[in-house]
Length: 405
Image (tube, rainbow, N blue to C red):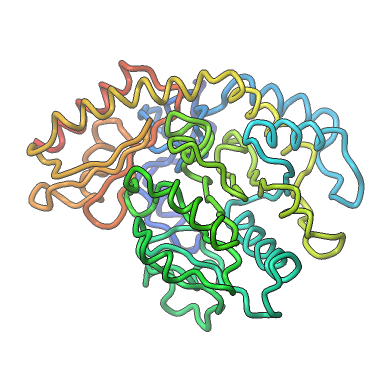
């Protein structure tokens, strides 16, 4: 990495943000100026091992050469047309993404929240036109402790009061049931249900992994009840858990997938709704859109991401290094760690409150040159780039052991 581009210190830059940047985040006190692979560098030149990877947006690390090359190549040709015209990159992106996921059609969008909003609209349209639900009566069943985004409609079915308080009135049409509870789900689904919308693994809740058989049970229930199964794989998908998709651990194919984060390779925001043809086929011109969704630059980068995943290399790395991660966390049980949940290169680690809060552990790790993020008070999330080496992963676990002690 070359010299930083600013002469201002980290402290100066943090102070400069205070009066001009909305306080909707509480970031750790580090100012990143450069990044490469699994490492970032602050404005003073200090290096940190990135164990968060942009909440899975950086599954392939910072500035992966193949993705940077694809972006540069496209920047020299064409960046945006809007969907008012066709572009020469969208068809290949959609074809390869559909093939990778085993589904038929792709609706390209930009952010994860847009993909969720789009999935909700498509599910409701499908319910009215295909299932025959009376107008404006469609319901969608979701799980408690979910995280699907921050829009007003999405926080309408959140159970996180911090996300909801002060933002009403809320959008109706949602039923909330406990996660990992098939009986509660069955009781909530009726003739008005358009879809069941779930995270195969709940990320923001602390990497909560359901019991074996839960996702297969959801798939069977939705088929039997005649509603859609929508899997939000925005954080869990695209290699993170050791498979292309987290639902693959149970051999499940949902009716609709919501993808984002890693789909943009850490370069541009790219998201997508991927579904069966009879589901996405309910949309007609003028009913839904996005100026930037499916733009040539995003499609070029997204295609390069799919190409990396088609090799299976990153899924294998996540599965193999996941064994190292689980082993290291198991060794910390009773030594500052009271529990953890892990699948592939993704873990939620519950810290003993007597040792510190999740935020305090994050600050201690920062001083040791490791970046993580807390959630739900006493939990930290580990989600390094899938390009991390076993030596780097072990170094991060050693740093965690040190700060816990």
